[in-house]
Image (cartoon, rainbow, N blue to C red; front, top):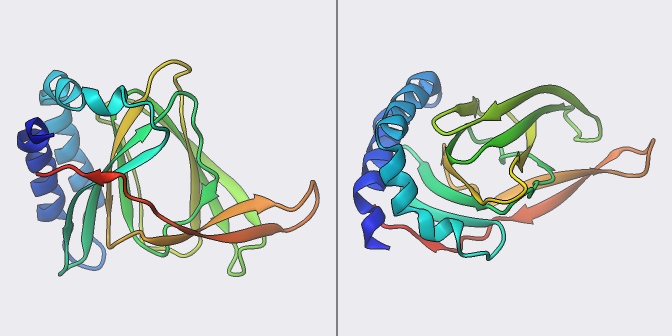
Length: 192
């Protein structure tokens, strides 16, 4: 997977440059990542084509991690019509950007106990479009690949290692939301 190095290194460097401080400027990070994705869309699509044809289900690929300040950069492969459960991000800030295909992102607000969730927004991301969130224990979202035929690819930048988080499901039609602890799995590493 060495052919990914040049473009992923540029994306990683932008994330590292802008991902500083407790509350980084995620709008500026998104703007610079988007510029790079738009300028290199065909090359990125070609370089990452093998991730779109693997057919191994939903996969998370680590691009880079940094210790101080903490930051991780990942590429995720979304099978056709795949949707995540509603989930949080362990209190981390994050940015998600489409590289190939389109993603729907539903934003949810949850109470301090995680028993009540309320849909508070929906975004649609095409290549170069980004959605981001601050470090907030009340933020959760659900993401879905909008294609019924193609694998989508996304870039994710988090303010730390998203190793553990909670997913949420409704207990019946009128019951409370149940929080279920989850562990993130990494399919491999894409060297940048």
